[in-house]
Length: 110
Image (cartoon, rainbow, N blue to C red; front, side, top):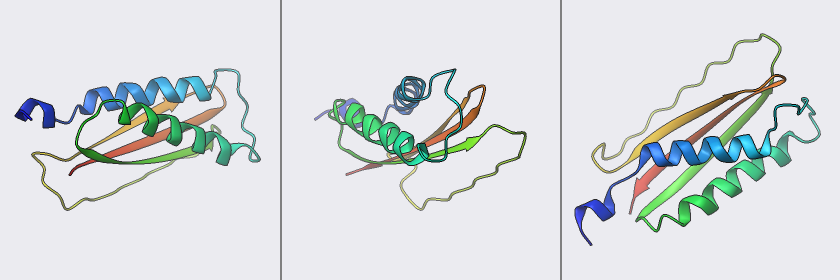
């Protein structure tokens, strides 16, 4: 396997997550607390399915946060102890009329 085969494609992971997010959360979707877990799970599962198609030697961790868009602030932080040359992280936000969504992807080389 060449070095290029092992490269993490952070931008590709981010664009895939954004596409998945926009498929699950449509522009006219209202905040519904009863469906939040389902929407988060759909986004996470679909992202992992798409990432596995890349056939790269990485383990992926995906988190999803959905909140009602009502003007409230949100702040999130994380830290990782890993090899910065092979591992990576990207967060993708989606601002919809009635919802805000944050998907974070951690990619760890195996």
